[in-house]
Image (tube, rainbow, N blue to C red):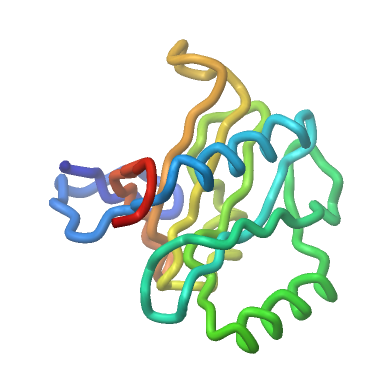
Length: 161
């Protein structure tokens, strides 16, 4: 699949052919979408961890939006520290970092881009607003590295091979 390269505030550049894509199980996909729907009208947020180096999102970890806002999300710093210690103890990486948008499309905002500090993670956005007449939500994944946003293909599988 081809994807556009986006920069912080302007959509520019040629189409890129991406190597890796986000592959996740239907169960994890459903959990992320359900969390976004449950927390609506506030933004939902969380992490999906996986075995270190595998790139496989396995353990769904919904987090509390400390901001409790329909336009902004923030991980509670003590919860986030606890989560990273737990992932370290379990030899896991944050494979997916997700949150929802409640009134806009599923595309990273400038704030989202500035907070993206895991270059190996897939940044998933779920929009619970019907902004494109495609249905009740959008589910999109991005790589965000050094302020550059690249959308990637998402493959949902029944289970991992």
